[in-house]
Image: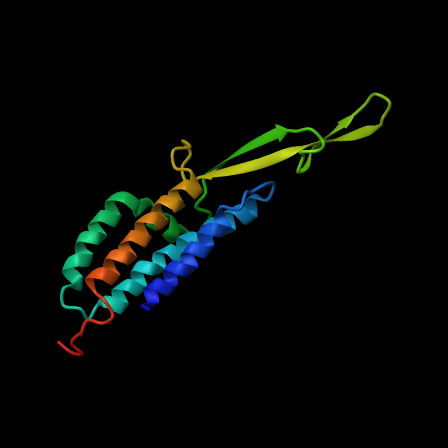
Length: 172
């Protein structure tokens, strides 16, 4: 197994964590997005190291680099923001509150205070959806899923093009 395959497995796990429904903890949601973006970027770094001794790798990878730059450069930029500036890649959150019957409620979403001073909890479900842009065009989890699919296909193609069983020259 190549090292970049191991990185892919870690990234897939990070994506599964991302898909866990987020309720009131936006910090946890952002942390999971950051972990995914940082891990995803390591796949291609490690791939370049693992496959650099194959004579045809650079030609193959230069085409993939252009493809990735055209489709996913904004995610690389976001990873750089995380790594180099320490700021969040998530620009906006959409917060949705659904009021539900007591039997379906998942959390307290508010409190009602009556004229006599008594209170009653309002129950429901709060969900947070993060976006990588202010216009709500790049939903964070969906964008990460699309990128992961691309990386999974890239890894599959790399393993086909440059199988472990193929002899690689030890020097140039």
